Image (cartoon, rainbow, N blue to C red; front, side):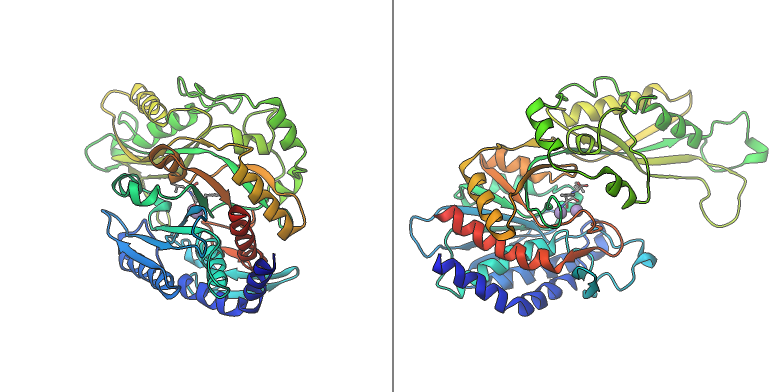
Length: 461
Ligand code: BES
Ligand code: MN
Ligand code: MN
């Protein structure tokens, strides 16, 4: 206990320096989806490698077909200590739309608000701030005689694009990476700002882009409109057909493998004091949509979805243009639960689109990745230890929660490395991840770092 107390004091005393290091990382625009930022992804990877080296750990930046992966190894001070693999991602979403930011997305700053301070920058919460809570906890241990666990670090730069290079990387480095007993993933949130959480369910995700083509080129809508096929109309009809009046997805077979919520879980979730009104008002709405009779929490954590994320076609500039477009396209994402098979969903979707194409319309499909949902054990020894550690830090029992988002690689830890994961993070629902003015609360950063110190201590006890 005395050792842990010293580590926690070190964290408190060095918070300013920790924040400066986080600001350094946040100032690197490591946007993974846009090739124009590739150099910055490499810079972020090198930055992390240097941090690990600076702590006396062996670390390398390893090339992949996409952005590099950083792997590091740290030894515990005790020989028989457990071995954890810590995963985080250094890549971020594009900052767009830029004009909605109140300050530069890659010029991190502290913003004052009533209840405390926020760190504002793209990636502050997703995932650089979270990743740094773990690194800074390790740093505090090094200042106090060393780590209680052996740690393998795995930092990737393609999470926001579905981790395309990571499965092959895990397979190629299986021996090196599976030396760890347990994966620790810091890329999820708290239940609310006072209540820590361990995430035990993630939704899966299948992403599809469709391009519908009609006439060979754009046409004057006066000279051609009427007898000539309009691809935007075809696409709009398909999109409208994807949901029925009850908000259900109409793809054949879509609900295969979707379980009804077990009553004990439903009961736990009802006890989580979720405030639907506050949820809605926080996003400027008043009514719960989707599947009637199913609440917000159930829908987000345990029901599958089909969403259109973008539509492109015809003239979208200022003013008007009487054009009959040659093509239209849309980007779709399907959140998946239970045992839904991402491939089957993708195939059903493609067949659904093809069946609705009138003569002369053609569809091209582009897949942007697919991963299944994930359910972790609710009662493992590691989870119970982590839960108690979090309770000590926050003074409140940690909630076991689901998550509507996806972290595709967590499934691969189990599949390819036979490793369970503990998903613990300190993000808040109002962090605006992926949106303008992303923030991470300073309290999340500080107490998140302290939480990892406690969790590592608890896992080693
Ligand atoms: N950190 C998020 C996942 C997440 C979202 C966790 C919300 C907790 C709450 C992750 O970086 C993410 O954005 N995942 C993407 C995956 C996709 C781009 C392949 C997602 O869920 O959309
Ligand atoms: Mn993330
Ligand atoms: Mn993200």
